[in-house]
Image 1 (spheres, rainbow, N blue to C red):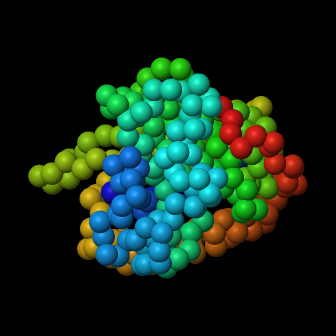
Image 2 (image 1 turned 120 degrees about the vertical axis):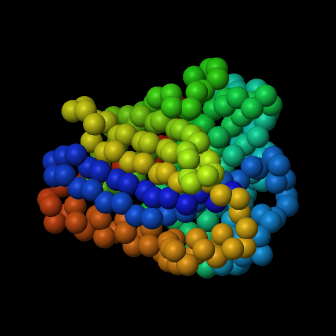
Length: 256
């Protein structure tokens, strides 16, 4: 599946800062896929193409994806996420990608949502996973939280917490209904909400035409992600937003 939409980011203080960009992501059913390709001549798996998905861009970069996520969940006491694993992530565009965040939606065999793993990368080449787990079934739209332990932006200290909300809804689009996916992430420090971020998009079945259309709408998306990160950092520097040096990375690659 392809999700065509946008990412929006708002900083509330000490200077307000807002931006929004068009993006597209892949939504991949990992158990259904197994080792097979993605069903499009323009979107390949583990090889160069207009768009591509490489397994080693995720997890520990070595272990096959399903054994990696299943082991991670079992090590955290989650034994019943034995249904579909949907991975939402940015694809490589012309061989390049930077994934600020990817989402692993882990279901039970009966289709209920059991846990979510948020896989975060920073520009220093480091990766950390936040496990969102309440011990039971997760509901779409439910607020979930995790303490911040991983350095992402030099304009935010490694403290406070994240609040997550994930939604999947059907929306009318002419005579059809389109499924819309939304991920909202708020970052709170000791003074309350600081950053409000969302990634949203309409789901479409992946095809050659839709892969080409996504590329033509956002031909340099992957290169743009990293360029925009540095551009927005420059704008924050000009606004004299406080700068925080990079601390040592967390010893554990996973946190709740």
